[in-house]
Image 1 (cartoon, rainbow, N blue to C red):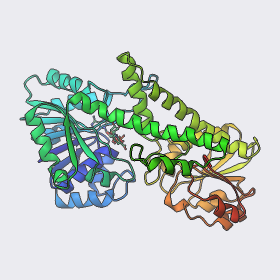
Image 2: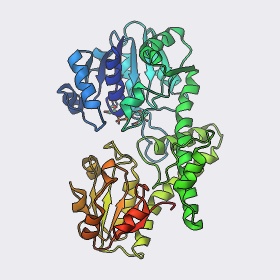
Image 3: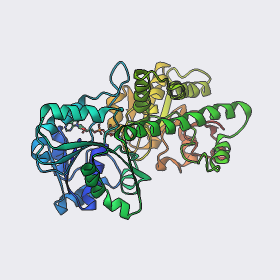
Image 4: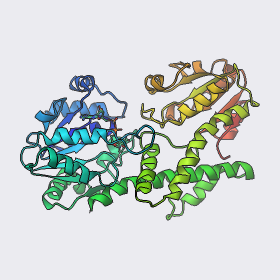
Length: 433
Ligand code: NAD
């Protein structure tokens, strides 16, 4: 099949590279010329494990190409995937649809023959109708259908998630469109992934409902963690205890500094805006959003409290900046709120992240970055683990003890056991334990 992906970011690039690996002919489009230039040369502008190999293999096979020219790409395509960003709109939290609408307009002008337009971006309910309207208005005679196909991949595990998804959701009722989509995903069906067909609006809402539910699990266990600290329980034990119940499940029950990233914060907000528009309050999601916002900054206060309420002029080492390991994505990372809270209280922040420091420099100021985590800890009054990169799981604790001015470790991801840290002479603070 001839596939086009508009938007070559985390989702578009992974989708395009995986589709070409399935054997489809794929053209990835982006309006960012430097991104496309880098991709053509075999470089990958984002950090995602395994993606560079997949892109290089795709280019070599001739099945994966890159362009900035939507018109040239779309002519003759069987399906065009819209995978552009849908960030929170400044000021009101609605999903900002300008990129999706612009992409629809550009696609419309280039359509030849029957084409399936696929909304892969996370978009509010009714966007399929709007994209259809835009295309119809621009090209009244075009032969097309609009399908919803939300993406559920996780950054850091994106290729595996794309190739072996729990499910693929396809929303639409045009039989020609569905036939094309079945062909696109046929390699996954052979691999026994579940492909679910439903109405377009149900598919659009499935994505938001899924993310809101996962965010709820995280916010829930975080509040249980707070209670654990007060009553002398251990949230790791409680999470394990409840997670063994199949009705609950063990995933997304890791207490920590609150969820961040490019999806949960903006998608929960956008769901609340849709709920407002339809006068159907989503009070559980409202509570989740509020609890999570408060939590990120509260983690900064937790560090300050550990240092007797005074961090003025003190050096704090932050290990991990990205919103989770195995990505360089800093969008809405908890580290941003934590670092700012510490800086507001007068601390000097020294930080290390295995791959996220370049992105972090764009959103954080007055941070001193170190390529080596031990350099960040040298002469610090405390070390704070914010992101659970594997490389932080077996740090040389005696060396840390000798480097720190005060032997304090705050482990916001619960990746250490208290006994081991305390045996090395450090005072250990965790979350919910
Ligand atoms: P991103 O910001 O990494 O990439 C978007 C890309 O689209 C950018 O490179 C931008 O230059 C390009 N673009 C914007 N308008 C364009 C246009 N008119 N023509 C060509 N290119 C254009 O975004 P992302 O993280 O890949 O997210 C894309 C969508 O997928 C969002 O709706 C997001 O919510 C959703 N999603 C993201 C993830 C994730 O983990 N990142 C997971 C599931 C779903």
